[in-house]
Amino acid sequence: MSSPSVCETTGPSDWREKLFADLLQSVRLRSTLYFRPELGAPWAFSLADHGTAFHIVADGKCWVQVTGVTHAIELVAGDFVVVPRGDAHIMRDSATSAVVDFFELAKSSSPNNKGVFRAGGIGAITKLVCGGMQFDNGPSDPLLAVLPPLIHVKGKGGMGAAWLQATVSQVIEELDSSGAGAQAVVTRLADILFIKAVRTYFEQDVETAQYGWLAAIRDPHIGPALAQLHARPQEPWTVASLARHVALSRSLFAEKFAELVGEPPLRYLKRLRLNAAVLRLRSTNDKLSAIAVDTGYESAAALTKAFKRILGKTPGEYRRNP
Image (cartoon, rainbow, N blue to C red):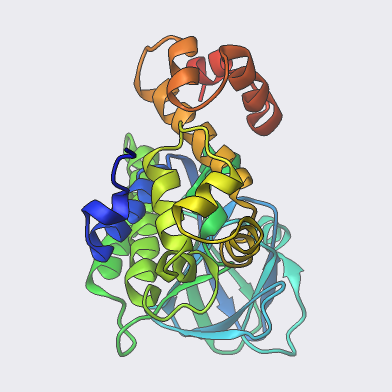
């Protein structure tokens, strides 16, 4: 007799929360970089290929447009946006403003030691806090893979949510202080900003999302399949066994999973397994052979091959220098 599934032993909200917690615990922020531009209209800058990016509107207003997203989004004071996978995007005061590369703009404007620089024209000023995040397991992390191109945390009546105001105030205080360990503190605060933004996205959109991972976990077939993969990534799952588990045909299950989640079931499973191995390597001294078996790999050699292909280093190299 097979053991009961995760969804059979817990209610819908319980296993969803377990999935959310599993994803949020998977990320580890390695470093962060901040700039605090004060931009006079007209102004516009582009940013791409620099990892996860975020922007906080401290004062004024502007627009953000992510490549591949059909419409620009207006941002006002107190708003916070995250571009999880670092997709190319433009921040601007208006659609007619000439666009320049963000780092070229910063370089020519000579930021001070607190990241503040002045650029743009002589019109109304928009003040931003812009940051970049580098995650040490970015290519393998399942959370970054399932997030939308843009997360928008709206301010409340021109004032950011209480947690956002408090965290941003701490960030600015640390940047202004230039004290010992300030960069480490700022990195931890960036970690909080990212996780809180993702959690806000989960909470606000889980019941309404029409596509993507949040729609997938609400689906009566794909949701339970995701719960199984997260709970037992080491199991020898196949598309057929997953389909049987949720009472769908193999072809329909595969099609539906890829459509909602954005990638085939076994590719998603490979990401989960590799990330589980990453977590074990950085938090334990367990032997590589034991980690390989426990995370679903046939051998230590198979795990090493996956590591080198996805992360560009061996498990031993990662353990010494994540």
